[in-house]
Image 1 (cartoon, rainbow, N blue to C red):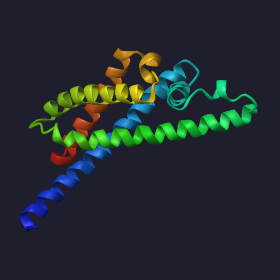
Image 2 (cartoon, rainbow, N blue to C red):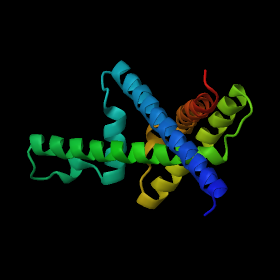
Image 3 (cartoon, rainbow, N blue to C red):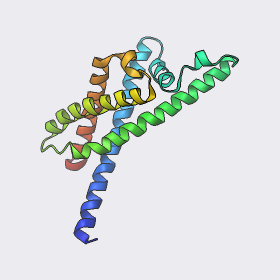
Image 4 (cartoon, one colour):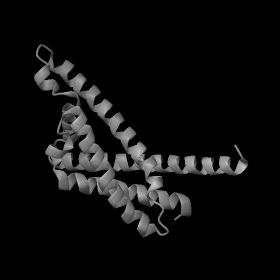
Length: 168
């Protein structure tokens, strides 16, 4: 491999790493939004618990002979597993943003990120729901809210990529 090609590959990998970090920031922002919405309804973990039970099955119905403590521990593990999956998916989609978000200005990256996030994350959510044969967030939250929050996530990635390359 020539030095020029190696340098180009390294620049691409560093940019993808930056996108993945932006995706992690976006994942945390989405989690904070849903935590805040849940807290306003006095159930701060309602969204992650419902999403985890949608993905892994309803522990309350399947618990049969389990004590409440055992069922709560299982729900906690499911929420942790869902959170890890959430972070992974957002990091991967954030890394993929480097192919799409090459805006010359901050605002083109932010607006492009909003569209990218809305489309990419929502499409992926539909795909995961279809594969897992579960409604996930779409029935729980509704499509407009999912698009809005995923657009916010894309906006964060777009802004992060631009600022990481060009500075504040």
